[in-house]
Image (cartoon, rainbow, N blue to C red; front, side, top):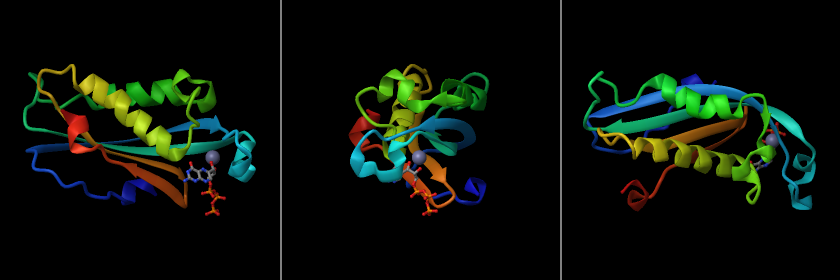
Length: 141
Ligand SMILES: Nc1nc2c(c(=O)[nH]1)N=C([C@H](O)[C@H](O)COP(=O)(O)OP(=O)(O)OP(=O)(O)O)CN2
Ligand SMILES: [Zn+2]
């Protein structure tokens, strides 16, 4: 289970927040090299997001857990990933989904005065397959 597995990301921020979430979605990889994954099929995706920061907002949050869930779960739950604009030119593989989730969250974090950063996104697609996305240092500037 995702909740039992938390790969650590190295950092020196004072605060680290982790949010687990999951959503059900369908996808397909439209390339003959993708074998059986060319055919639309579904997964319960398990996501873990790690946020770091030195400063809190006036509520004492790095960012509201609920806002993180709303950004990802509301968008993808019970959807076909291939239908989303962000997957029109790149296939919704686990790797690209993880990078896309990072970009979605980091774009919101950049607007916050307390300037938290998204340090890691884990996407588990099946019980035996998952991807970790970590940004380069320069992506966080
Ligand atoms: N590098 C990647 N490889 C594969 C991806 C991917 O996103 N990145 N995706 C798939 C398929 O979408 C598939 O749903 C998942 O594949 P797999 O882990 O092989 O699924 P199984 O349940 O068959 O795994 P077993 O461990 O063999 O039971 C394929 N590859
Ligand atoms: Zn799949």
